[in-house]
Amino acid sequence: EEGSSLEEIGFNWGEYLEETGASAAPHTSFKHVEISIQSNFQPGMKLEVANKNNPDTYWVATVITTCGQLLLLRYCGYGEDRRADFWCDVVIADLHPVGWCTQNNKALMPPD
Image (tube, rainbow, N blue to C red; front, side, top):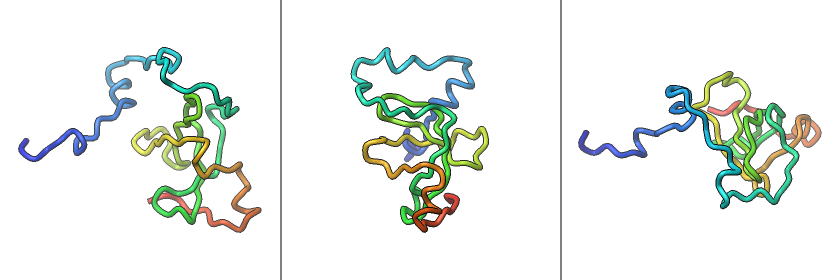
């Protein structure tokens, strides 16, 4: 359609892989992926993460997968819905262990 672009369509690799029954290539297949930082994050771990829309608040997220210093996270409450998954860099992201907000008087608020 006129005026549409790929950005508007919002292609989602996770949905594509699920719909086609394909598997993603492991990150080790790509030499440019930085794997020198050993973060010790594991899929299934819970973290308190700065809320993307309101960085003064935090919400609990689950680690979906790791790729070197990158984490694919899903906010709690989204179940199996991949549409809101997001990547963050452990070096620069505002990540904390569960309980950090209570200890530091920070607000826990679900994302929009």
